[in-house]
Length: 242
Image 1 (cartoon, rainbow, N blue to C red):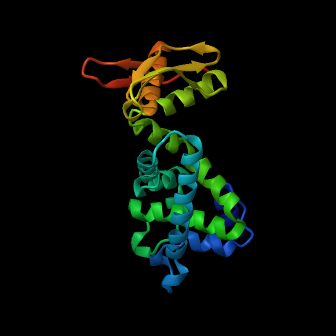
Image 2: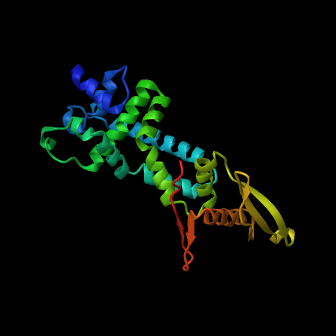
Image 3: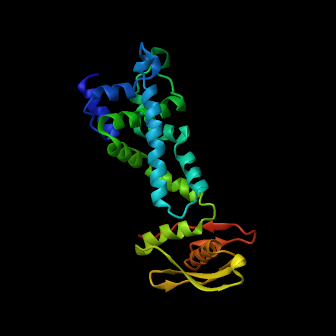
């Protein structure tokens, strides 16, 4: 590969390789090489693992109130081949991917471009280690984590409120137990949210967890960021502040 191609590709990716062989392999489809081991398939395998770990770790850090099922849904949505292909298209990897003569000039399948994106992650990981690979993933995928979390919040109003609290006041909500009733095996709790020095309407719940969720919803409604419809569904609005 000539230096102009290497420089152009590194500019697109946003990472400068020490070993250009990793970059060349990452962008070589099996149809363009004589030996299959020279294609990007092995790097795709590695990159897929790195991508999954980065997304899982970032989701774990960003959404401390999300349960395993919710985090799994976010990961599944973000690391899907469709999303990988979308990112590959944004980076124009299809334009610089080496393919066989029979594929030249054709619109490449999402399986091919998505695999190239994962292979690039694997190449960066081998060349520079975990941190630059993580930076590349979060730079190209970061907004998609938020989008997936927004569409799969699963009525987790605590997590929604936490994100809004950070944007609105730079602080996280506190949940204050005001009262509790009933025997130990069947207690009910009255809990309110306290955020940025203000207390929001309290709610009762059959457990601390459920009472906290209901209190978070009340705070969102008070902030006019949630609307509860007659059918019981809840619409969460985007926070428009700075």
